[in-house]
Length: 193
Image: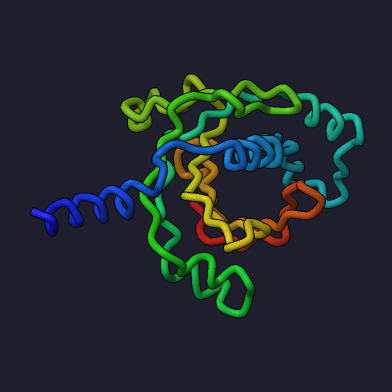
């Protein structure tokens, strides 16, 4: 009987120690990354004009566009092994290969906001395939689990950014904390479609 109680105790303390909902630090990071990735692109230059210059007025107007940004609600520990190798010589490699984390679900948007005014919503995962996929939002962001080093001064995660079918990129974001604020140390591109 005492072994059974010990087993239950160990399972609860070890198995339940990882929270499945996101915390305030993760919400702050997600909010910052939304504003970093929700931006427009200038129109392509005319094919026959090699000296085409995009006016400052057009560039300024792109900064004023507000998007509807959808966040995929499940954050899985999914940084692919081939991507890990790109960080082998950095201080972030040990963070990536640390323990496997349980998936986290973004249940609501409390604390996740765009500082520049983009509309933020949770993606309807049942509506992400087919022709209606990008009718309710402009950009879809898919965050992996955010992993931290032991003293919570560095963080690493992979982010997928989709602007439509076959218009997606993914990259590993390596962040460092200075003066209680998170900064992008560097970004490692992983995929493009």
